[in-house]
Length: 448
Image (cartoon, rainbow, N blue to C red; front, side, top):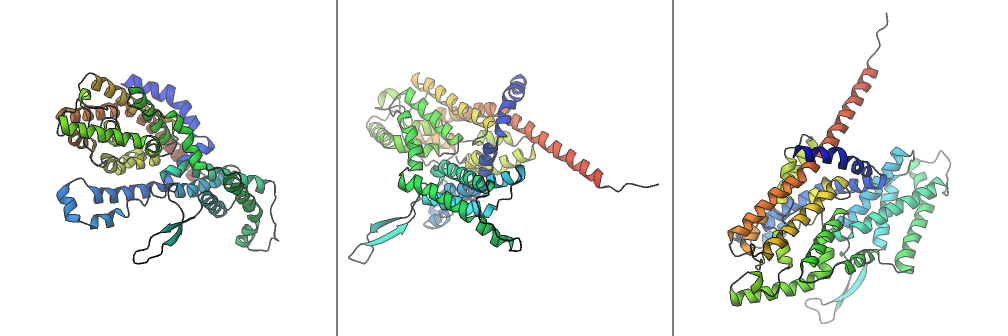
């Protein structure tokens, strides 16, 4: 294990770490950190409102929905938040590393305005209780406001800042006398660049008619060949994880393509189970269903959070402690956006590899008749081992299989967490050295 860890740290991690230091990669990682606290808070509300224990839920009654109202504080508008954090992060990067003095408030507001320009308000007709005539309602669709719109927000935020920066660098701005207050001057400096940015996105979204969020989703539709086969399941697993790795809600994208068919498969299996009482693959019309993936493959990131608890890096250890409760209940966003896994080359590899290994092992075990096909639907928030126990109607071996899978996940994640730990410790040591040098320089020199 030590030799493998050394190989990861010395051969695999260094080029990936250099890649992670690239400008846009740093900005994208910063994006996840900007919303991490909201993701954790929302996860806690979701766990409190949906803890899978019937007497507890009965005690909460209708108040559980009041609690759940705060569960989407992070995820429901993750795309919108991302348009803010990306613009701010990239503006900050240029100010710190390229000597610009761009007002981040201007680029942040411009990025949000551009994002909303691509997601315009719509008016719909609706029936109003107590009135004979239908009424109308105008609002911004939330389809791409959440995690599914993150990649669109990345593109919008980056291009908005780049266009703004280019125009400012060419001094195509309105200049006021130096005695004008800076906040007033900045507003006029922003006028021409902001106008050109808005015109650009207006042309893209309304004149040319490019629907960026839908276009991104359509790119992956031909790749997902929905079907009851091992190959289709492996493609689904890889695409799902790759999408999450770049900040796109992989589950939503894949489900939007395959969800209808999966629902039919699950319904047919449940009907067959009611008639035959068997979960053997040979007794069911379908095998490679979404329920099978939910129970044997999508088992959460709890093993990774657990491994992080033993890190020597205070950042990784603290994040592991914060993320573990949510990860146990299959909520992985705090780790995906907080560590981050997203656009972090060091962690993207095990993130895809772990679930691909679980998928391959599941295919082998199911084909040899060692694992049943889960048929019963269980809330996704149930901890993975218990969820599988209930989905297979109390069969112990599937639960044991999930626990063994957790151990394997921990072993695969371990060397990559160690590589991140090494990077963190090196950066901390460098900061300490710089502080020591600065303190020595500040000390007064004794004169004889």
